[in-house]
Image 1 (tube, helix red, strand yellow):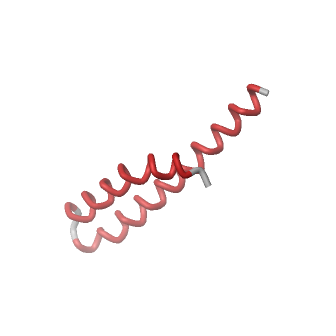
Image 2: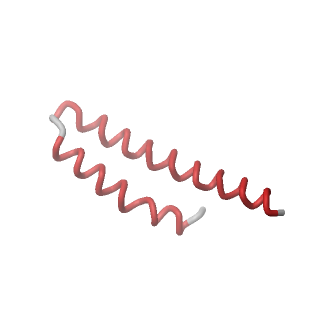
Image 3: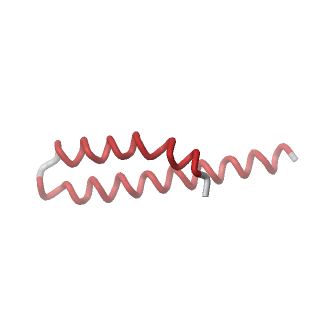
Length: 59
């Protein structure tokens, strides 16, 4: 696991999830948290994929 990337992305997405959970109506909160978690993992894996492509290109 790429811990540096994980811990770099975690705080902004955690703050975003908390802000959305407090500001959205009660019935939309679960969707906000779900989408925040989903966006976190998508961003994480895209970052890893791009880094692997750049490493292959430099070889």
